Amino acid sequence: MQRFTVKNIILPTKEKSPIVIETSDGARMSGFDVKLADIQPGSVIEVELEVKGKFNNIKKWQLVSGQTPPAAVANTLPAAFPEEQTAVLGAVYLIGRGEVDKESRLGKKTLNWLMAHIPGDEDPAGIKAAKVAPKPPREEAAKPPEAAADDTFKNVGQLFDWAFRTYHLPASQLLKILDVPDTYAIKDFGAARKKIEGYMRNPLTSNPDTQKLK
Image 1 (cartoon, rainbow, N blue to C red):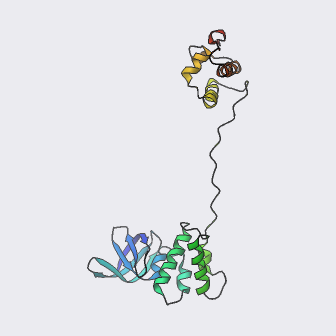
Image 2 (spheres, one colour):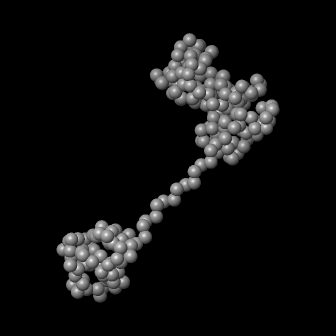
Image 3 (tube, one colour):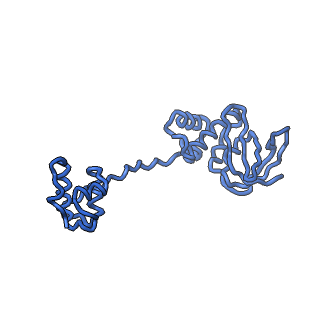
């Protein structure tokens, strides 16, 4: 038997199609054993292959290391209907990974099928394993900070940030409105804010020359 590290499991999308295993060294092999769907990426398996043309068919296999979470489901499914088992296990696998919502049509059909075909407990281990943790609430986009009061601007950066968020004024235009050569000339941030607000209320009559800030 040959030993491989599993890179990916490709579940069948059609009836009577095999489960395909991709290995870390690029090899591909396939088989119809429904338990192959339980193998997790990174697991190490030993396989006996039968080569038919370009296909590597898995005759026998065993897990050397790794996990197979839905094994309880595989061990309790009825022996008949292998294609149906493969489809159900594929759905269980996707539900377990959170890629299919258990409340969706496919999710409900899958769990109902398991309830109908697995004898005994009303909530078998396989269904418990397939349950999906509730998704965390979507985080709301961070809201911009509220505009500071006249006397709470701690530096010219806060003043310019308020002016840009409130009036979309770039720094070059603010310097013209405040009639200062550079930001170092702005000393009274409260007065600067009032001057900006007065200019925006009546930009045609506001006269920057009369309110130069030192």
